[in-house]
Amino acid sequence: MKMMLEKSALYVVATPIGNLSDISLRALEVLAGADAIAAEHVQNSAHLLAKHHITAKWIRLHQHNESAAAEKILSLLRAGERVALVTDAGTPGISDPGAILVQRVREGGYRVIPVPGANAAVCALSAAGISDPHFLFYGFLPAKSGLRKRALTEMKSYQFTVIFYEAPHRILESVTDMIEVFGENRKITIARELTKLFETIYCGTLAETLAWLQADSNQQKGEFVLLLSGAEMPEESGISEDARHTLSCLLAELPLKQSVKLAAEITGGNKNALYQLALNLKSGEPGF
Ligand code: SAM
Image 1 (cartoon, protein in one colour):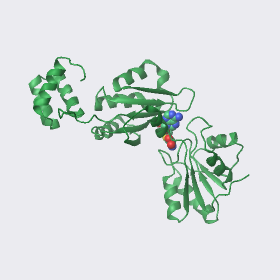
Image 2 (tube, helix red, strand yellow):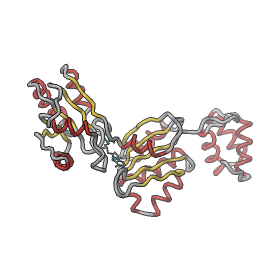
Image 3 (cartoon, helix red, strand yellow):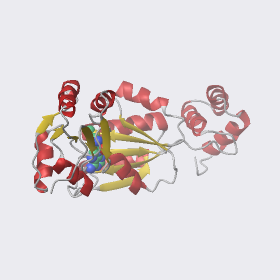
Image 4 (cartoon, protein in one colour):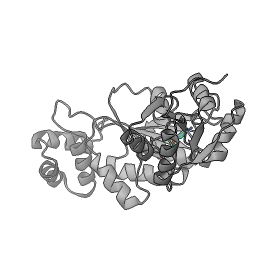
């Protein structure tokens, strides 16, 4: 039996990110009741719906035709139809098309009704065991290393978890760039192939994570969410994570006194505290 949907409304429907059973009862009811379904790749979405014996009138809506598809959908809404929007996986509009359509529909005075469900970032966060209540969802980093490093550098002082999406062919490069920007010891969680057969959740320092990825090429395959821990809060000594990292880089190249002087100038950190830290670093004390 078809659910009664609101006339002239756009339903934004989340679909699974891997396991086809991860779809809500309401999502199925809405998809079964809609007059038309807008989808990124009709074949992928038709496969999901076939599992639930749902057939549909399809409209293609993807990154490259979203404005034109929005016009078509607006004309259906004007005629009183109920339209559902889905993407290939997860929640539409999250690193996926949907925002332009939603804007146009709202501007047109029609209702936009979200039907919540799977999202890779939230799924990863729920299983990462990160106690920090704050996080930033960044999505995909730039594909080119220079731009990627620039984007990462802007996040250097963030004291909260940053969540990235990453493609398999860039996973090694991205983790390598993160090491360059944040140092080897920053913590990261990698959530790979969530809800699928080879689901893997790995936590470690950036250096450990790179080694883990390099040790087994299978771990470089599939879909990834990266959860990068924030910079440590400045400690009682007043030395921030940033100052600590700068000092250890300088110490690798320069004499101790010069390193301390430069680190204090570059980071604004307390010179005496940096001097003490430099002595500890040189003597190989743990914790640095
Ligand atoms: N709209 C989706 C959402 O709500 O999560 C995201 C779509 S975005 C085009 C696809 C990216 O999401 C992938 O490249 C990957 O980074 C992440 N992703 C999607 N499914 C995933 C999964 N099962 N496991 C890990 N990451 C996933």
